[in-house]
Image (cartoon, rainbow, N blue to C red; front, side, top):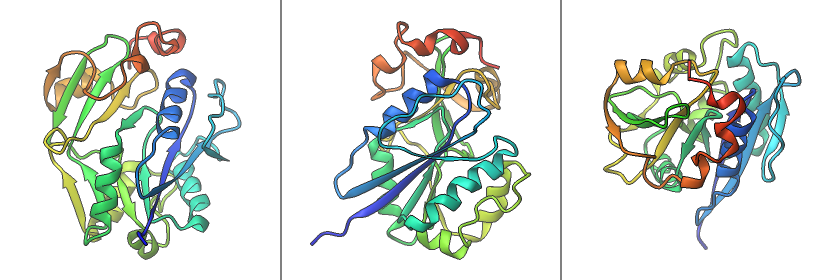
Length: 241
């Protein structure tokens, strides 16, 4: 009898309802042989533009500030389910099934967390895409249950700090695997830039080792970001900042 793996996808959501709905549907429809998915989104009661609920997701509530505390509240809620792997994605992050399969395989071995060293960035406002390398990416990190148990299920120990910085400090004592070039591995991971982003597309384009990509990243559904899609209207058509 084959052993199944439980992978939890954890995200936090705030405003940008059209893009958030795309992300929730993307992971809500994801299936992988031998894997049971748990999907948890942390939302805030004072969100002025909440995304509609999507089937397949469990929702918990926490204040949007501080953001590290919001992420930790989601992890706290997942602890009772004791998933084998927890993958952290932002509300504008899209990864394919191949990445989750890689996480399952890597974290069943010696590695305690998986991190990407390259990523696609897609700008909703202009339609531009770049492939960036030599990065330390906070999104898409995958954590084994062994790591989480050793860390007492606390990945954001100071709930008032910067989420990525807090993780970077904590993770120094754990074994990691870095996927340096996702294209060689057949993996697609896309960070979509719209409003309310911490780093704008132009900033990333000027501060990373990157190359332009014609059109959308490969394997990303064209319909997801077609010009007729609601995500190209209202708040998402504004130039990213």
